Length: 366
Image (cartoon, rainbow, N blue to C red; front, side, top):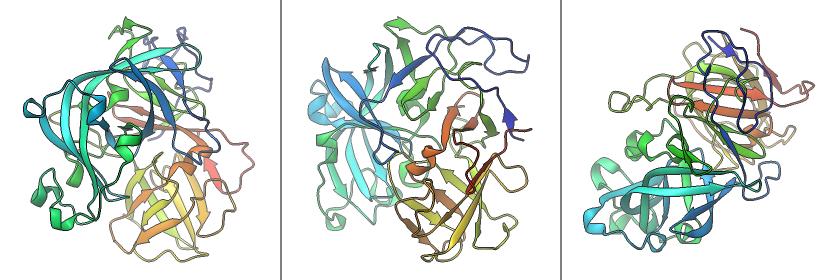
């Protein structure tokens, strides 16, 4: 069932408020808000954070559609490939395979325009080669694209570090996308002070202006949450939750019973990836109910090829797969803030529209 938190903007060093006994965030007060390091103009570009690694300042793209921090191996000159775990990150949308080795326990500092600093400690993939590999299969190929399947080398990792902070990606071609590699749920200090585990609740909130780490009763107000299912690696790591759910209906059709699939709100892309049982043609209308039509947190509608609302993606790429799947693209964030609670397994939405929009509805009532 959806659950409602109160409505209040987030601040750094939240003070405790009176909350129900069952409030999962009662007593947690340590939090920090770090502003995006690049202008966020209507979510037309992916967000980025200013980082410091090995004493050098850089800008890192923040992607909720993948898990794992990566950067070119030249940014991590002290590691020995022979002593590090071989690894990869595969991006299913672009078919780019980043090949390298996981450097353990890398400390990354993130800083915002107001002087707030946070630090994460996770393995980082030192990228040795990035290639387009459309036929990549981890079971068959391991961590490297076969030479005869490579469609060319790409230079993205050299240009800018790429930090995946998503969840529910640890399956199929991304089995290394595990919670221990997610920078934003592995924060170790705020403003150079080690976090107090009794006062710091892991998790993050994404807004137009910033990312907020450390969930509190104050900064989660206004969100309605849904419970997540256990992911394939949950027994190994109790933070390994599956992605949230969504129901899909095309045109004037009703939501099909059981036609519920995985939802991914992806800051890494402008387009939508849709699997809804048949081709989604230009002019078609598609409705989404999150997580389902019986007890939705939110519903919204888009029309393919018609930017009649700001939540419509740049374009829709779809297939006739009978396994429903929706990657919304980042335009979803024009109307919703999102949060992820890795401890109890919750995903939350907070509406930030005017309430006059006819293409989106938010359901804050229990």
